[in-house]
Length: 156
Image 1 (cartoon, helix red, strand yellow):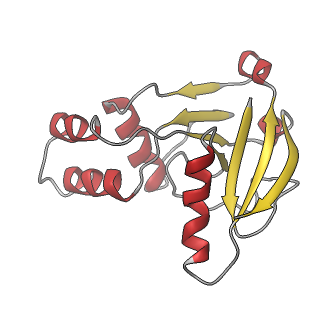
Image 2 (cartoon, rainbow, N blue to C red):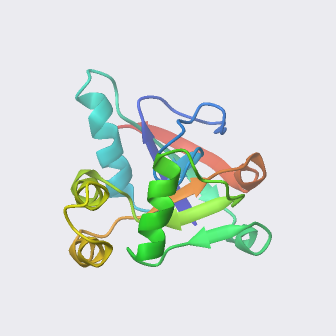
């Protein structure tokens, strides 16, 4: 499988150390199989006057059988609970890889409505069903990163 990472620089040797905590799936190296999504991730750097660089990797999917994997096939209550747990720094799970939808601005607005008590969980999930599909793969351990191989990078 080919996956992409959007940034302001090429990342030939991804690691966990340089990632932020308290994001969607916790600390890790985030990729997507959707080139257009990686390009959008680059846009935020371009708006700040930096370059946009997409790094491309091959991923050995056989790793799914060897690693501890959590996969969300859709926006769901379980996805919402996991995102909220990670974003407030209370995730204590030991998954190597987490796969699922991105909590982008539109999604995050719905999540905020829920956390502020303005809508219930069922309404939040209902609203999220109409969000444009996206997908992120978070490599949360160095062990998982062993199956990710840098191929090339390109400036957008």
